[in-house]
Length: 69
Image (cartoon, rainbow, N blue to C red; front, top):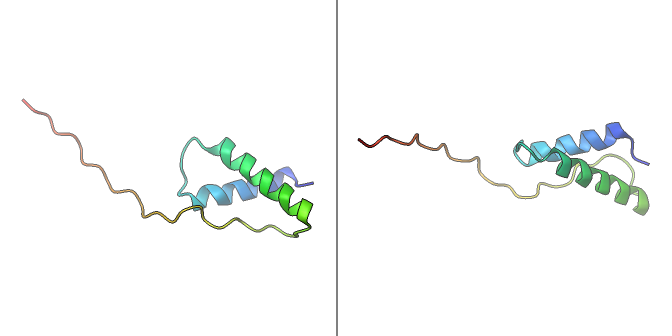
């Protein structure tokens, strides 16, 4: 069974691969847990972060809204 430390490490790796989005910590945790459980079930050994979901360019900076008089 995957340890809490392994799950958190993989979840952190997923978070980084997705560009460090806020508010998705539970999604990353449960995805990491599922990946590790599947690895155990298939006999895969070791900690391997999953491939990136999507390689997107960094977001463009938004312009500040201008006030109209």
